[in-house]
Length: 195
Image 1 (tube, rainbow, N blue to C red):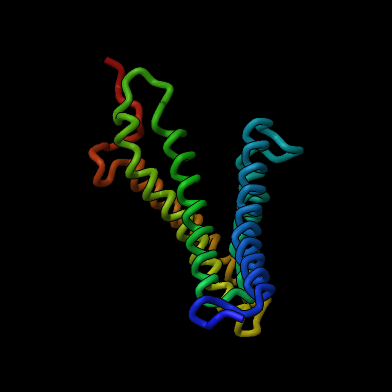
Image 2: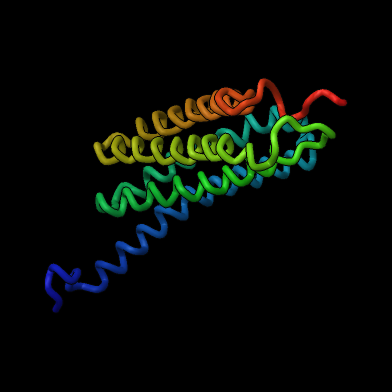
């Protein structure tokens, strides 16, 4: 038996907590990955059935994306306070980093002869947008967890998904602000006028 200062006396309890934490991080990340995979497929095919890629994105991809914080809420409901914050920060950080890199790659190297910004000048805007995306998902998941823990699972589904839909529009707003150069030395897209 170990002392309370060193850790729990029952290694099974610690192992179960570690498994719950790992599941709490993995489940929402898998849903985000599924959403990204569906978007990528629709982007490659251009049409899926009667839906073009934009309609498919709004009808399928965004609702799957909004399901990630709902799944997080249910996966996080039995975590300790410390593990809840670890899961939320890990989830939000992974999504922020991956989003920032993907956003940066998509805007830093435009297909034009006279780009307005260099690739390095897109780093801060991409980071801001990535942090908005990852932080929004983590915040929606934490809100949903609080509601699930209060005994209202259906409210958690509605509010968690609804909050994330709002976060999608916030991310779009941030994208518009950073891509138009507010505070970043540009007044338009990334392609300037030809010489």
